[in-house]
Length: 191
Image 1 (cartoon, helix red, strand yellow):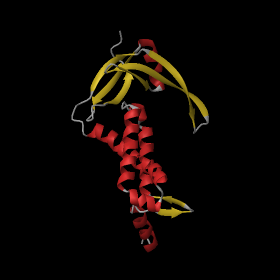
Image 2 (image 1 turned 60 degrees about the vertical axis):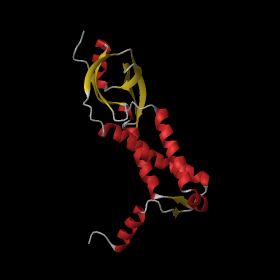
Image 3 (image 1 turned 120 degrees about the vertical axis):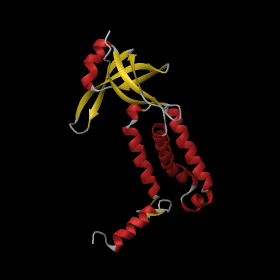
Image 4 (image 1 turned 180 degrees about the vertical axis):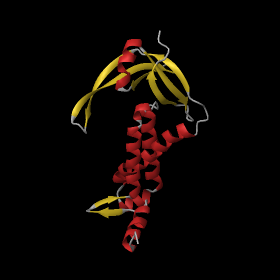
């Protein structure tokens, strides 16, 4: 038998996501683990994200305030209102992740591949945790829909982009009217 009764009880206990639990004097809810996981997913995909950070912060904070107000009595009794607000920021991360996900998945528009002029090329030093070395990551500045965007490109494309000063970017208009970058590569129309 792959699971014992104790294992199944722990899984059921974990899945009660709104239930307050205490471990080593620290109160938490399992939903906060999902929120932190969603934050990691957003940060991994941040390279192609064109939604302003102010909008994402507004969504996260307003969700936290709303959940805190809805469960005011519960949080006042169990956790304390200030700790509940901070804790509910993880629920805001879940809503931010779903906002970004629905912007892409619910959009019925097809992506368009266009060439963009590169206004600025720069190398930024990044630290690689696996090899414990610093790497240089190329960034380009282009105008997408009239707004200057700073985007990271693959290191393999750096010499071609530097030489021709153009990139091809596949952009899709999202469901919430925020553009989504699907691909970035050197331009095939070299002038």
